[in-house]
Image (cartoon, rainbow, N blue to C red; front, top):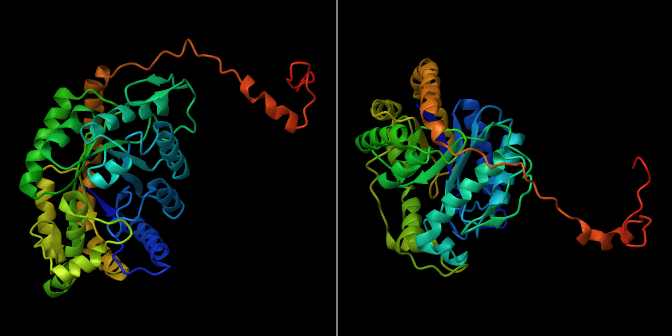
Length: 413
């Protein structure tokens, strides 16, 4: 079982002029820390307009910065929103490839469709079509990763002429692909598309066991890959608070409730006036509380027991949500350091001993599943792109022109 963290970029009011810059510096320092501590992944979300809940709208920029301050940890888009109105498929492919090149091939590419009305209404995305848009966009993005040139698309949600989309990713044929999931139906959909299932639901070990069994069985039997490689991995989200004593755990846990309040506000039934509504003020006035009864919350001994249950349930990856509300940077780092020293070694040792068997299983599944994938588009009839429309610019660049206005090129030029 591998370990990752999720950075959510929460920023409760009140703000100062340095609040956002301090937040970004803090999260880069945490990315550096978990790289040194031996975590496997750092995942970042993409959200727009979600004041106080998430202040990261450009995950590729943050991950590019993190790539220059880390050495081993994998850098996860967790997730990039793919409806074309939010991210043009060409730009999505270019962004992911750029970060993969900068990081030396450490990108994991998770995709999502947006599960909140704040985004879909603003970008004019029909709610009932957002998942179809996302799947269609991903189909084109993976073609852009591998086709030279990309032979274009004339689809319902996206039209584009043949072009060679560059740069190409460092990893071949492309980075591992993941789909955001929040319930069993979407987990099985990820399996049928040959994608890793990146669950953002806080599931206990019993639920995880049911998900894992259904996911892996569906993957082998039914997967028709969207990508040109498969990623048979299930990941679930868990809150992490690791402290030496129960009293310290309780003290920090009380600060987590704001995260849940913000989630319900944006993904549930909140009413929001942009730039005016203060989630923090509303939260503190309401005395809102939520009892966290699942997750990796407690002393190292308790967390080890919980993780063994997840491991026995067949979980491939667990992603820890480490920030929420007013939990300080220092408290986050202390929790991560204690976890890495007191909990992680036992599981790392087993993961390393099982790595050869997992690679062999991936090879076996690839032999079974990849023949179901459609072949690449033919590149035998590549259209010529005429550049005549740019002729007027020649006169401003000092080229000598012929009678038709084209530059006169000397032999050998």
